[in-house]
Length: 268
Figure 1 (cartoon, rainbow, N blue to C red):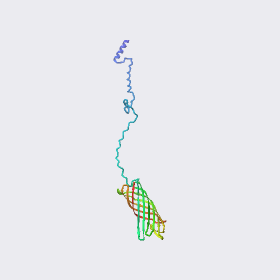
Figure 2: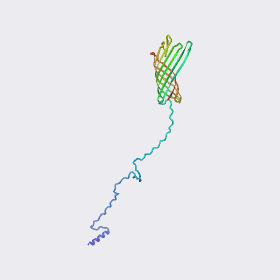
Figure 3: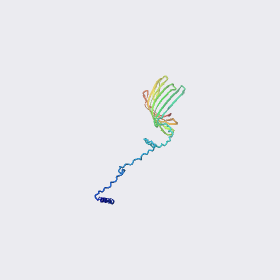
Figure 4: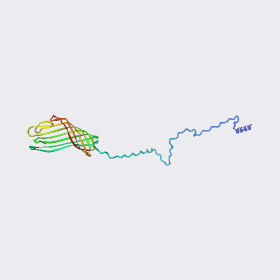
């Protein structure tokens, strides 16, 4: 019996069939490859750093690219200084002097006079200046009848001016000024009574009589300047002034004047 059963099993195995009553085992499923079940890993953002043998690793940032060198600019000589530039100082004014003698058959007369009027201006901005001027005058004269008078006059003015170029060598420099002045005249006369006229007002005088004048005036002076050389000029132009206040020995007597005046000066 056992031999028959063994023969049957062998035949079944050879035929590939499962003998009756014998369970058929299911083949075991193949185990998955370890790499097949591993989680997906993102590719690195950069390639791995390959370190050469004996290489030194530094933490310093690589040098930034050098900016292109600027194109050199050709700079010429600075512009030549010109009258009226901001920051300039100007010194100008008028100088007058005279001396003479006039003879008469019954005597003689002489006159001596001297006057100076310097002005200082500063250009605070281009062609616009502010300044001050002072003046002093002295005269001594003797008439043919031995009537002598000595006069001293002094004053000061402040002015505002603007320079206007008319050509490379000529400019107009009008100035508006406000000033004050004082004058003292002393008379020396022979015995007797005399009468003199001061600015149109008659005064009776005797030996040693003094006449004092005080005035406040406004003036307009517009000289044409001729720039003959660098930092040097001469000029001439119309001048006008009028008294806002004028008294002679407490008598009011205002003046008005229209004429011309010259000037000479330099700047730096």
